[in-house]
Picture 1: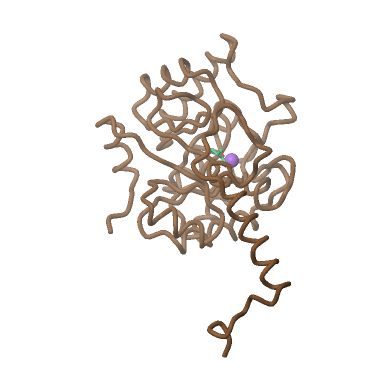
Picture 2: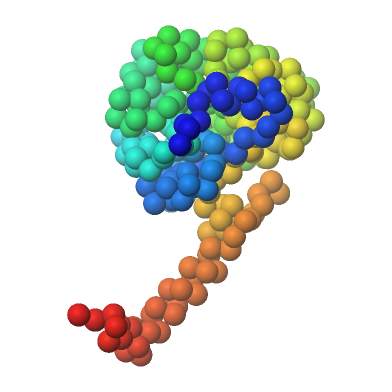
Amino acid sequence: IKKITIQRLHEMKRQGEKMSMLTAYDYTMARILDEAGVEILLVGDSAANVMAGYETTLPISLDHMIYYGASVARACKRAMVIVDLPFGTYQGDPETAIRSAVRVMKETSSHGIKIEGGAEIEESVKKILSAGIPVMGHLGLTPQSINKFGTFSVRAKEEAEANKLISDAKLLEELGCFAIVLEKVPATLAKTVAEQLTIPIIGIGAGAGVDGQVLVVQDMMGMNKDFKPKFLRRYADLQTIMTEAAANYINDVKSGDFPNQDESY
Ligand code: KIV
Ligand code: NA
């Protein structure tokens, strides 16, 4: 099996071949997604929401991200594994940033890290890259800054914010980031960024004009009926399937149907 590398992703961009990315946080799910052929598995700090039930991504710790990251990396034979650095482990201080990134690389066997922001985190990006650690950027809606934005609504609709996003994306490319996630921005803006940059732009709620797409796996598998943003497409209805399976199991236990003789020693 040929592992997905940065070089391969860049070749895909040059050839106009779209790349697929999904989140994963655990071994079992990661094994299935890797075997399905997803190019990149993102151990997102969305784990704070979907794995731990927090309302924002702010509370998750680096130790938790490392635990999830190592679980996913153990499952992957082909996919590139990228781990989010969580809130408070890279902003403001490049020394903290590199310590966090080095811990992720040493303790998870993943292939790179993702951090949110542009010019604000320039020094941290430089420092992490200086250690030979691949960095994926993340612009647009950056959930670690939710308290600054106030809402999870579409970003960069106004010209000033759009211009800053374009210059941040160019800066991240110049610094040496290998790819950038663009979250919840107008499709035309995302397309412009993808056209102006040579590194892959991976969108979530950023339209079809980018180089690849990412979704949170529990969302696209339909495991949470209450979460239905416009950008989400559901590829399965696992909530219904799992609810029915659990109900059938409960019935069989209560009726004495499970276990039967074949299922007993
Ligand atoms: O944490 C996450 O799941 C993410 C993706 C939505 C890009 O950062
Ligand atoms: Na994230």
